[in-house]
Length: 239
Image (tube, rainbow, N blue to C red; front, side):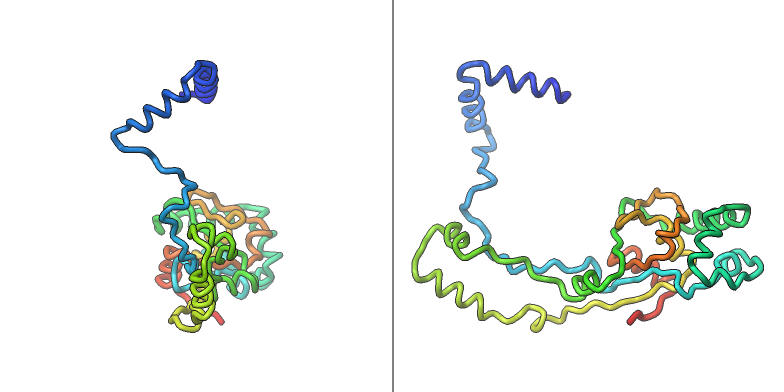
């Protein structure tokens, strides 16, 4: 049903006396029973001590710094020492040409071989992102007054429960949580990731774009697919 039809039907039901009551009655007589409100406070789970952790216990970083001339390494062309400078390399790739077309074909063949689907998240490497992934922050507790309202009572037991919650040890200190960091050393995989990532997302069907803003950055991801690819194609521990 189109949006305009839904609007018209809604307007007609509002103009007909008793339409709303009949709709409520039909819902209450549904064989599936009455649907509870999403905002009901009954049976509310107040255990908010959950922690959002990375998808994988290993992070992998992709960066072209120190990776060398891709025309030389991947295509066997004559080495150009200037392409050790990422700005000059990005400019050469952006200009295009026969060698660049050949490089794109090689990247596309490898990318198809990875058999990736959907979307994958990557993050620009910075101190805040790394800290959030290395030591995730627990989901915050509701304010005291709201917790009491959701519990539906207001007595001394609340104070005792809240005091017990505050005395619980920090989850990070009592858990075995840790993340390992790797750096991909496979030039083909690294070029593919950097040239296809847009902002913080890589779509499997994204084309290669040799923009200087893409090639000069360093990105990290906890996506298990990229972690597995990095391990399979070559990686080193990343401090």
